[in-house]
Image (cartoon, rainbow, N blue to C red; front, side, top):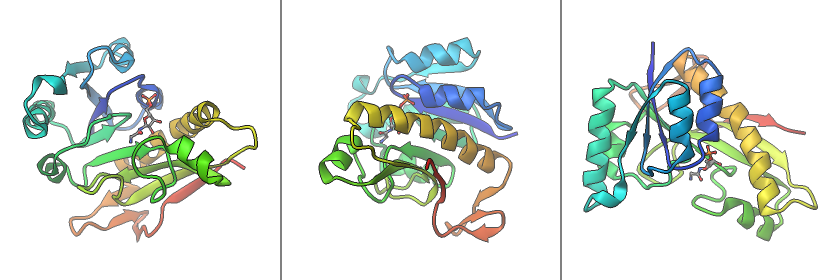
Length: 210
Ligand code: GAR
């Protein structure tokens, strides 16, 4: 069975969706860089081991990442899931977990990498918005996309309503993508290619909410 660690910084609603999904992999640990993260309570309630590794206590990114890396090794982790983990990871950490680390991002990548995605979508006047599950590579928000949830931006949407609507989509697509990794439907090959049901995946599988 695939052993999973989830990295969080905040509320952890995506962590909760993963816990509730009864994945065929096992979430063995949750790491937070923030001691006050509500996600830690969710993990404890589910009987999952937690580790608080505060980035502020380390002199640089590399030393913070090295402690996380050791914790993942101690838990014997196969798959690292970033779920609202709001730290940029060092190149060496990312390379150590290449092909074994995924993230969810609140936009239709490659559009709107980085922060404040909902407001930027509203400013541009886009009709469509969404979220993307992707493998993590050293370039920010640029690894191979696996799945996307797509919604139509409403005339009365605000940053807050979009955030809420995107969260609903995230809670559907993240557990699905993770289950596909756990049961071998999605495979990351040594040459970097990603296969879905044995075929090379060229573009993400989209779930549209309209
Ligand atoms: C999610 O919307 C996720 O897409 C976003 O943080 C939120 C975490 O919510 N991640 C990023 O912006 C990463 N660049 P949660 O703590 O309730 O799961």
